[in-house]
Image 1 (cartoon, rainbow, N blue to C red):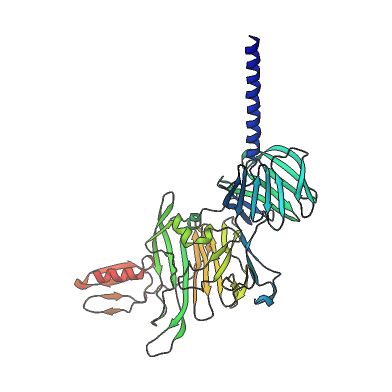
Image 2 (image 1 turned 30 degrees about the vertical axis):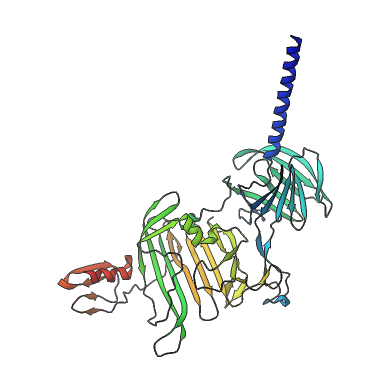
Length: 474
């Protein structure tokens, strides 16, 4: 009997020891500073504007409890690069493949997280109150755990831990979401939200940029400059342009797609010269139907899936656009009404207009490229409005642009639509097959076909080519 009691007591203690060890291990595991399934959105100015997004791009297993996490990188303006490198001016360069404030990569070994960048910074995620360690060996800065408390973060009960640095800076950790605040050398970053956990301030779903309702009206000005080649003449640059007005009539949606029924009015091209290329971009402009699928939006409008500082290609918009080496930097902002904006970061001016392009084909130093001086690039999207402006221009003769010049959304006039003279651009005539009148027209045209059948079509609500073909068929 005493033996059985002793055995039971030993087993009970062993069981309790296992529970304590499991709790301690779980406690340490919960203080994960980088979760590969998450993307962390930070602000560097104390506002709700996302300035940085950090996420893991690659994982190397180094041991049983040791990993290397490679993190996404950005490009920045190199304002210390001299013009003698081969650029248009001092500071007119972009440096690519740069780390963000947590470095190029992070090596985790147990509870020690080494963030490797220009300096190597160590954060211990299991330190108790009063524990200390060397935070930055290169400068001798030490860290100590100052306090730990419960709090509500992103509407979830969480535990926070404060770490004081010997230079006066502070780190704040979240048991659930990693690094909540990061201060170092005068810089500070605050966590706004976490993609993947779907908490806090997040980037909009790309479909949210094209989120319209019946009654919304959008007017685009689509223009380009190409070489005209009239027969018997010399080639010369000539601009073609037209307006494209869209009215949303109906909407259906699924988990990944929004479909709109639309009515459209188009002005005719303003040039009769042959040799002009079609200025329409790669992505579809609306006619009687307009569809946005999430996968297609990702590929056709890649900036809507980008993070701030990401290098973007230009060839997606027009297949015969700027040289393949032209790139720009994605930038994020918030409009006065709270809607998100994704746009190209302005790097200077070219041809008298703001320019965001840099020449990625001309590497003047390792990872350093000059601003483009002979190419102008401007890209601007706004949540709930869509394309505001996409422009590419070269010295001669190429220039293409899609600009939103009128927008009435949700009954609000976001951009006053221009006054457009909607003429048919069809010569009024009468032949044995059909006649079209009147021209110019205010609101409709009438087509009389063989057998003298009369058909009237509202001018503002159908594509011109559709109206013309309908008359011919009758």
